[in-house]
Length: 102
Image (cartoon, rainbow, N blue to C red; front, side, top):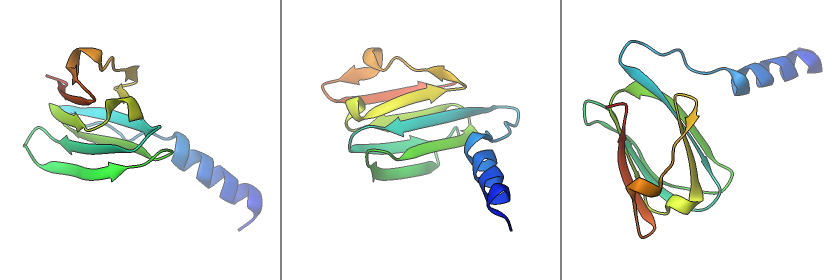
């Protein structure tokens, strides 16, 4: 495979978004600091429960509503269905807890 083909594949993987089924939402999180993160789907299934580090990203499509818990909210930039989420109303101290897509 030639270099330009590999670059095209890499760009496609980075820029493509998961296709959404009915009743799903797209959650994207970019981490700028260490942040404990837990994400549960509309069935209550825990999809992610881990410490995330600066430079890491999460992008997932899942059944709504999504429940999001962040242990250090200042370390995360959250987007839901393409729109930036204002975390302030859901933040107590340095932690945040919210439901998206209700």
